Length: 619
Image (tube, rainbow, N blue to C red; front, side, top):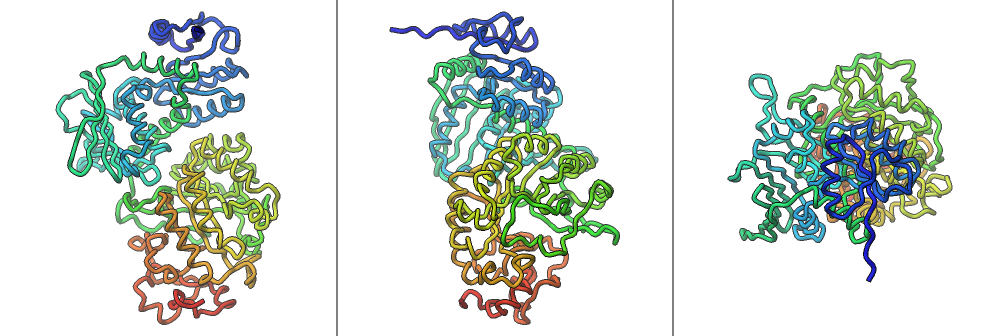
């Protein structure tokens, strides 16, 4: 019988941390190398454990590791920035080096079992995650500010980060009457369609923390205290204990997890991206406390006549019926005229597109927060072709813009280095064109070879870097029958994207007076309806936009998917009709009229207005 050889380990980090970990690793049978050995020497070790690493430590470690492929386990400091962690993960990925998040909380047998229960569908579709702490939110804030990396609150936040599967958008607690922050109120946020909260525990036993998972079928709770751990399940008024665990050594369980991984017995370890999500969530907590949510009566942005901005209300990056949030104002800048695709329906090719030279007019960005504008979208053309894009992103973030988005086909982002430039500058999200899952259709629409593969690679790189991805499918005569297929693909293969928008091709630019490109909306209606309902059933957040959407009367009963319908309580000019839109006199009697933008005037010139109002019956 063969006996597994001892694993050779190199510990990197502060001396006190090395000594603590060395003791536990030796007990597990590891051979701990002399810390003076070079991490890049493959003859020295099978695994590198770097404890308490900050941003500079990670950069230095990456250089020292060189191109060797041995796995590395990293304990990040709680104030290490997402950009620093993302850069480290990217460099490791370039040389095929696995990264294990050596955070003891994630390797506890109790949490591993809880994660298994969730993954196996015991709770159904997860709707809410709650972290309960003895002192509530102040405990979490205290650990972040004091950089208490081993504190129970940070351990709970790490668990929430893994369960959510993506960065959480937090919102601050309310202000107290004295004007200071009331940290006794829950901190809430969203991750996709999940609601996430940090609150005070009302359970007896002052040292215990609890992670609660509420799903469509049942509720699971992991309670962790000095007396041990317990997983409880509740369904239909009945509660029972699923598992209980005696007190254990979290460091020892982490070492056992590393050993199983190195022996090939366990692939369920927490990879470095779990650390990236945790870093995003810590950063977002601080952002939420520093930048309170807008007041309910926040006014429309004040724009002087010389600032000819394309400004509009936008839904938050993550929007769900279970987590209503206030919209914000966003300014859109077209910063590039050229494009690396040649789409048959491109509306930017209309001769009227206004291009803004932000290098010559930096005030257009720096003045936005003071005018009540919280978001910026950079568009074009293809904005990633403008080499100043990272500078524009950094400038917007430096003056207090909270949401920076780039509207792109993501071809450039198939190069991870381009993603890193934008991520390090502060990019929050990408609004990516995604018109089909069939390569032939994509090439027909974009007139660019290999577009689908490159766009898919760009989406993957953006998600890996912790940047939110929102997909935009422009519905046209060539792809409208594929809409349900696109919805199914996103639900199956792109589960980490935040939203899927179904725009309707604008009858402008190359699509002007082109019935071969612009289909009748009545032809599209059933396919779009099937796609929206498929998204809802599979948990994909889908929407129909206002500016490039269709009148609400075409999809009766599905108004909830329309952005303007969701914004109906916030619209400043509910009855305003844009110059490029038309409505019938009978529209004024429709209850949806205040939140409907009507029909494109150019569309009406092609097909008439008979579909309006009666569009659900006319073909």
